[in-house]
Length: 131
Image (cartoon, rainbow, N blue to C red):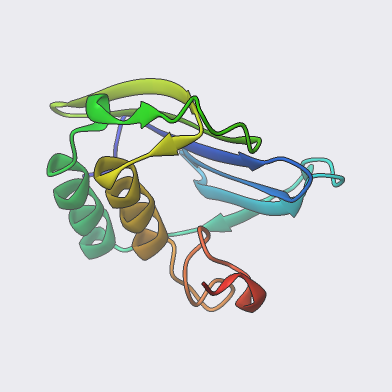
């Protein structure tokens, strides 16, 4: 039920970065400021089978290839992912990604990573980021 490969990263220039990656030991999750180096021993999360199923269903409904860059905006935001999970296969890096498909991807990742440490998921980890 787990993916062959699940990697997702967002970089926000002069702000923060987040990264999650599925490894046999668990889901590695890091959310840090741009001035902080990656941890030698990042946090591991152990999603339930139900959570994996919900993520796969959510990803199946998103056209990952339709995610496009807004090249008119140069705000230093970038997202990268590699997902191999059954029929879902996508590996991309997109500068300033925009659109409904990208928001769907972010929502799926955020919902999947809700935990005690990230009550709103890793996409929106800090209360001061509420829009």
